[in-house]
Length: 320
Image (cartoon, rainbow, N blue to C red; front, side, top):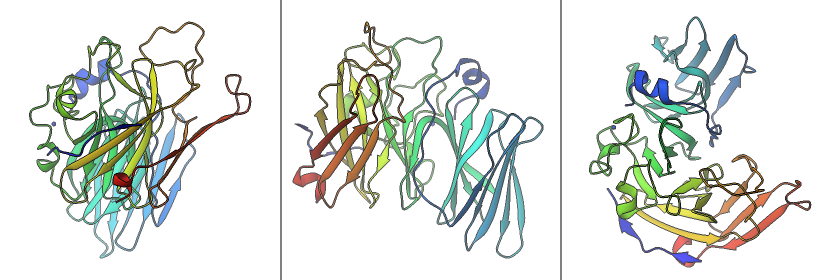
């Protein structure tokens, strides 16, 4: 196990540019729950997502003719917000205080996060990313910083956390010195949680192959919303990573463990003869902080006839 000391760490993509550059990447996975949610089956014609709690009812419709978010407040007020033409479907809606988070799947495989003040009907923030994951208490969204998947070399996964109880400016404070990425400023926001330090501030394209991080799994929060875990590759090495984020201060701790028997798994951006592709949704990640346990699994396959399972014990610093 590699241990990293705790450290203190403290932005919208133009659609014309990124629309031309954004092509497929593995789909995003989301966590979290709501009081009532209904989703239509995705189709080429229309996709519908509905959300309801004690304060509001929201209905998002994405179609070729019109994509919009309709809000109905408890007092009977109705509001409508237009969605981008790049939205293929709405994957998630959840409320945290006066903020409504909407996660949209974009044509081509990326994701867009919209943050709406549901009382006023104003879109207060919007950014593109990969693999967004909402914490169980709906206070934070973990994601991989956006990069185009075409016309660039050696992209890197840089992991971030966006806090819904902060303003857009506050969510860009810790990344103000970051090297701007393609599609800046939409992708340049959030608290850097992995990698950290100087590596977190570098561009996320044109990164040397041996140094580039690549996300291999979805981002999974602990049940108490204080930590998240995922599988990451850096160069040819595949590792399990746990990140703990301070509830009020921008304090980050992270720990990683090498995962054995994964030498034959393909890693994006690396030439490996005879490797087997594993989807980010194939990895099972179960993080139990109170029990100091992290479990990584893979289902049975030609690569793992009996499946794959690795149990890891968290250090005391990760549990406190």
